[in-house]
Length: 283
Length: 283
View 1 (tube, rainbow over the protein chains, first blue to last red):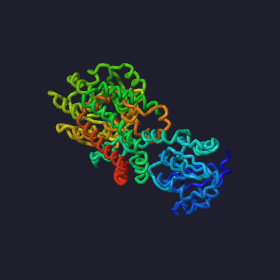
View 2: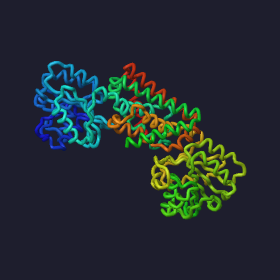
View 3: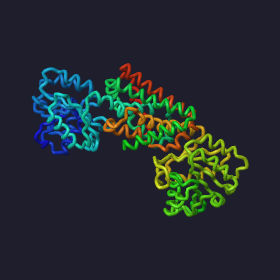
View 4: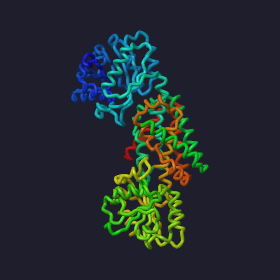
């Protein structure tokens, strides 16, 4: 695959869009354009040399794009595609970066008269910042990329996106259904963010307490530095799965609490052994 | 303070005791002895050159020790001191490393006819391993050290231990009552370990799930690789505080769950903003 054969357009030059542009530029990508409603983001991208052209309107860039990577917030993706339906090049591959899949995939695949392929993706990478000024082309190195293709997608198109993402730096490209993605991600990402927020929002945490913080609290609360606009969207649109995972977690917490209350060190030891074993397997 | 003026004895050459010995040795400490019931631990320490003499019985070393650092599990500390009461040098300073304080301090301070000073300490450092072969003299670098002296302790003795710990590498030495220590540590350390264990023990975590793990899950679950003998002791002896912190945390989780269920993105955003602000302050 020679990346310079493709016109690639990134919609949304924020943290993720900017990082995608950087990673693609580092590959020597040919024609790379960026679309954003914020002119300063475009200027930043042009000055950094990570895009060849920048646009505040979508038509020009989309008409030429073979691959469109939509790096908008989840609730803007479907609207963006619907609003610009007539501008996509015939046969273009459209992908996104949203952390939830079922709803987006369902809505896009119900659009009639589509002349593009939509192959939804979730780059499992990021940091606590917002905006292109924090973009980092190395962000995707060794991370996992989840892809949730439709039955109608051509195998070669799926392969194209998979190969592109591996070239960008992702270690694994994992193919699942949107429904499975949302169920698992509710545990491995959504729940962990809820835990971090609940932990630092403890009323007990005050000036005195801070000196008692060691590695375990720092690690468990790292993602409490959270994108406050994005996350309510993610959690609410994945509501059922997230609530299921919260409740499984609450059950485990309750069982440990009961063991402590009952001085049941044997049960605690058993649970800790299981946890240690599982944690080793994850590493 | 010239460390070579003091005979220092470390009781228990495990991960922490071994690391203490290494850190003291790096300071050029004079006479450093180690006590352990396990001869292989003593051999390891002698071969590594981190102690000058090793003993499986306590009397000889204790009789000469100006400073005794007891690096045993919490439930062994009081027993050890009682069993060896007559061997401590008059005026010696005894300290420990236990992660819980109230019970130990109460029991030691009720021993009649003590001829030593007990100044309890909690080095907030460690890792998931056990045993002197994983010891690391740099473990304490920039960590916090909590000290819970008794009213009867001489100011100069408290200063001696504080200075020693700063020389070993600790950044802050924080002086509080044992009760306050146990209450705060229930949040900043005990709760975070319970969370990590509860998270990886989720029934949803299987082979498929693992490829979906990103940084947030890895960080939140790091301490699930836990010392299975030590932790039931810590949690059960700090039972009331731990249960209080679990319940505060459960309340926060419930309030986020309710907000998700009610599509209340405004409330979620507010909670996330608070969490972000607090997390920034911790860094």
